[in-house]
Each structure stands twice: as structure tokens, then as C-alpha cells.
Image (cartoon, rainbow, N blue to C red; front, side, top):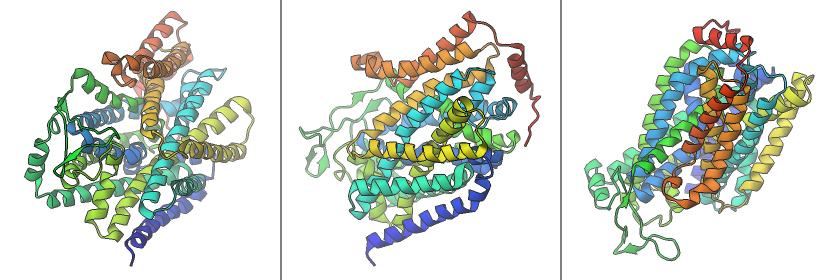
Length: 523
């Protein structure tokens, strides 16, 4: 049988399994908006942990991170992975339990904008509107990046035009999200997390064997200047076309580039983004019992550490096995696909390719669902039509999903778009907009509505200003925009909270009830 047909059969089997999950959970999901958007707070510890990480990591774990290590060595990829692992740990450790408890106290909030609005007991829904607007903007871009991954994966494997495969992938994600809602999405994310870690592990083990063992890999990588350094960076030598120069069958590298403390902090700053990531924070709110979060944290950390470490090492192994296969930074992100197709029988390669598809679906359905809830639940029902019935909210949500998917497809139509940079910018936007106010909302009694608004607007504005203006000056301004924007947002929260009226007695009572654990869980 044709290898391409075998790969396609394997991927169809996987997609069919995902659809079955959606059908099974569709009835439960459509009972109410709470069931659709938050799964009725019924997630167990394993599903909570694995779905949170799978929805977060996306296709970059299987393509972007290995590609970064393949292209310029250990430093950038490793420090990014370390930052993400640290951010994951502290998010689960200090945010998860208190957010689960506070979301119940805050009028049983089921979305992030609703939580912030109820947390500050606002009558005029300024926070809810701002939070919903930022979610709509950033998640539409995120969804577009996932559609691009689908389009490129299918077009590469099957030789079909990119735009056609982009639309097919987007329709599949949209139909699945419409069908099952949050619960089905979380259950499938659990399955996809397993597929992702198995795919990574299988490829790296086979790769090490094919390369002659761990020692041979380290010896080869050590011959490349700066490739295995934590405080230096390998620099591929490029020709005028932007491709790496090859001499005597080997890729050419220049001298090791300096990798100072600013570069390290810039990469570690990725971890700050977790405090403001809606797709992760919602899992904290959705778990059935807050006591189960400790187990979820352990499961999540094991998955994250293994997945990140293996993804980085695949790039190192791939540089030895296929040293001149990918000669541009963009093409280097295909090293995982190259290794899968080269080392595995077609039917197994198809399941590994399903790992990439799994990561993409995990993210895009999360993004679309959260963005749809931001408009239908928070804007439509929360602000514009407070008398809207649950059925009307569900209808508006599905219309919103269609519109957002269409916008995502339009953004993704150009297969040469630098989506990774846009996603990096959106990650910073979420981290700086929601991260600081989430921490202050949970742990500082004095924070008020003015501080919350100032922090959200200030953080988002600084991301734009730093990226589009200051970043061009280089030097200290070349640092990842999330770090300075996060700090600026925190300063805005403190200053505006202190110079304006203190929170009401009711808000302070809510805070104390949550702090002391005196909250009745209606579940």
C-alpha cells in the first residue's frame, strides 16, 4: 500500500476517535452554558492536568522547540523550556487552589472575565468588557496560528495546496468545538497529551539508536561552536538567500555568539505568561474538588518536564542525523516530521503525525471556545442583554465560533506569514494583561477595580510599546516584551489601588473567606 495512504489511514483513525469523544459528551455539554464552557466543574485530577498542558503547548512543542534547538543549539531552547517548567510549577502551586475556591465565591464564575468582574463586584462591567475584548483579539490570532499548522502539515504530507488543507483543518476544529464544548475538549486533550508525549519519546529513542548512542550525539554536537553551551549560542553561517552554507557535506557555523544574563532572563520570562493564560486557568476553575489539585500539579509537572526535555533533545539529535536537510530557520521546524517519516513504518508515522495534529487541535479548540464564551457569556449576556436566556447564550456562542474561525482562516491564508512571532506577541499580551491582576486579585486584599483596570490596560499597552517601539533600539530593549510589561502592569495595579478608594467591606469579606477556606463549594 502507498505509504501516504497508510499515513492518512492512521490520521483518520485518530480523528475518528476524537469525533467519538465529542459525540459522547455532546449531550452533557449542551445541558447549560456552565456545562458547555466549564464542564460543570467535573474534571478529575488526571484530565485537569493533562488537558491544561496539552491545550497550552500546541504544535510548537513538536515543531517549534525542536526546530529552535536544531538551528542554534541548546541555549535558547533550554532556557525557554526551563522558564516554562518553572512557570508551570508555580502556577499550579500558588494559583490553582485559590482560584478554584475564589471562582466559586465570586458568584460561581465560569469564565475569566466573569471572575474578574465578580471579584470586584462591579456594577458597570468595565473589567468584563476589557478582559473579553483582549481575549477575543489574542485568541483569534492564536487560532489562526493553529490553522496554519494544520494547513502546512497536511499540504506537506499529501501534496495538496496549503489553502485547501487550511480550510479543511479549520472546519474540523470548528465542528468539534461546536459539538462537544469544554468537557469534550478536555477529555480529548487528555488523550492528545498522551499521544504527544508518546510520539516525542518514541522518536527520540529511535533517533539516539540511529545516531550511534548518546555519546556519539554529544561528541558530534560538541564539534559545533556554541551548540551545547548554556551561555553561548551557535550561529549558522548564511548565504545571500538566507540559507545555511554547506561545505564538504557539513553545515557551516560561525563563532559562538555571546549569551548574557539579559538573554537568559528574556527566555525565562516565558514562564510568567502562565499566570495569565485563560486556557490553563480555566482548568483550575473546572476541577471537581480543590483537594485534587495537588495530584494534578504532580502529574502536570512530570508531563511538562519530560515533554520539554525530549523536544529539545530531538533538535540536538536531528542536527547529527540530518545536518544539511533543513537549511533555513523556518525549515528547521520540520525536523520532527523528517525523523518520523524516516524512521517509522508509514502507519506508525501516521500516528506520530497525529501527535502534531493532536497538539494543534488541543490548542485551537480551547482558544475558540474561550473566545466565544468571552463574547456570548460576558459581553452579550453580561453587558448588552442581561435578560438573555441560556439558550440564547449558546446560540450566540456558536455564531461567534463561526465568525472567529472565519477571521482565523483569513489571517492564516498566507502560508508565509510569520505566525510564530505573532503567537509570541499574543503570549506576552495575555501574560502581561491578566497575569499580574490574577496574582494581586488572589493574594492582595487592598487591590481594587481601578488597580485592576490600570494593570490590564497598562500591561497590554506596554507589550505593544516595547515590541513596536523600544525593541528596535536593541541592547537591554531587546529583551522579551513580556518581562517589562508584566512588571509595569504590577506597578500600575499597586499605584492605582493605593491612590483610589479602598475595596468595599463585601469585597474584603470575600477575600478573607477565600483566604481562610471558608467557602461553600456548591458542587
